Length: 167
Length: 100
Image (cartoon, rainbow over the protein chains, first blue to last red):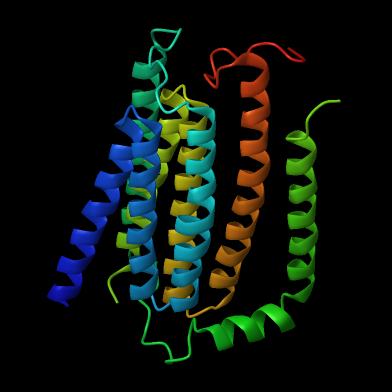
């Protein structure tokens, strides 16, 4: 149990540090790279929570495809450095205060309800594997899966229309 | 397995950092990345609860959230490129007029 705890806190501190580094780095390319590191850390959490399919989808879709798209747009626009001076001076202190309130509220809620939360047994070896995910996806969730394909088609058409040259 | 409250607590911390990023940063690409961080924090809570309740539906929902995030990023980045082409800036403070 204690090795689990040590691994959890190492990975959790890595995730929080990379997220904070993304928040405070002034160069957008560094922010994107820190976010990739954060996604990889969360993928390890998924592996620990017996979700191997989701972990690999996280690495390929999120850390791979989506972040490559981000880096591509950042370098295409040449917009990695922008001014960090907000036009409203009280915006940052207000945001920090509200963020602190949100954090304290959420943590208080989670840890005050921890007695009511389930502890979780040991699931079967197939839990979260591609076989189980695929069987559930194509039987119980077939209609949402098909709707997802229409969503992706719409997004593709939207991106093409938006980036088309005006004639 | 560790108590699920640990994972949900970490998810809450990551979500708060993402929300702070949306509020503080002025670069619209970094704001977009903060939204991705918030989606990712929600996914972590989903997977933790799926493990705790031994319900595979939580992981299926994470799959759908990833798909929606991919669609959102494709359209959003196209919007950012279009805005940059007209205003030569992606600072959200500059985006204060429509059709301009």
